[in-house]
Image (cartoon, rainbow, N blue to C red; front, side):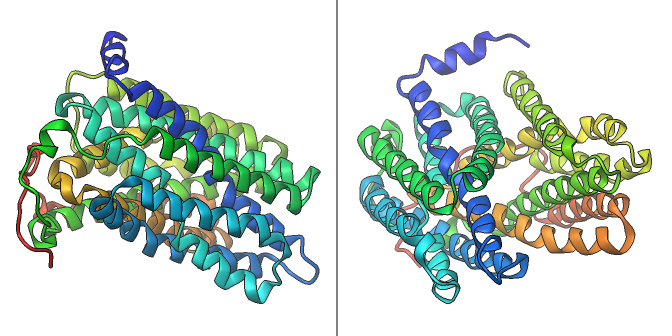
Length: 400
């Protein structure tokens, strides 16, 4: 695999800046869930049950708000949506530490609904800026940036809450999100390419793009994050049961590096693979991981084959989505992709936790992988074909 394709990608005007801004902007966004959890847990009389309620409210808000914000971006442009959501995030995070629990739960839901759409916006703009033949590489790099932000944001939230307390940590998150929103507003990357802007103006009916094939794609995305969340919980549980909790951070970081390497290699390959193939393989390779026993070092070795497929599977799903949806509806489609990611993680955590408590981490690995394989098999009848389709032309019908 040559490095030259990445150099050609970075020579596209604005791509390097967009990816860099996206990496930095996502760090405070990825710190929010951990900061909220630790804040609630440290409140007098509160525990993980109450923290879970706040997290659930925030997750539900984001799951609903993600496609809504994308639809507003499609209709009204990037800057108005970024302005509203940036103000909403600053208001919430600058006051969240003051709120009593009864107010914090609905406030977290509203903040989730008005979450800054960094993830979907970066992907939508990449699809507009990068030619079709280079999108797979662009989305692979974007998946790597997401991986790096998730390796950084939650860790900084833990350090902040434990050393500075909730007030300063949440204030820092507010500043970080404000800077992220302002940076994207100033940058104002295009949400449609020059050729797409030449297409006849008109509202796009969901019936033209929200097809059974696309719903099957979103289900596959949900399955991928189900596998990833369950794998992380099972890895942590295995190390904890072995009494080696101090190694959890290193183990999770190594697992993330697998994904980074996989994403880098996948982006430079001459051709990509179907998201069904990548997700199905990731699930199948996760099923037997628990058989290696309780030594976390051998467990990390066993996780290598599935781990290198994480970023490729997710980047392939975004690439396919960008080809299956018209530019005029791409923001809403990217928002639905974000919702699918959230649903997979939210569903996986309690299921994997219950399996770990009842039967041990090995069974959680097996069930997670099996869910991924079954979901891929269920998606097959609705798929458009073995080869990924070309971009959908711009329809001009009235919105449904």
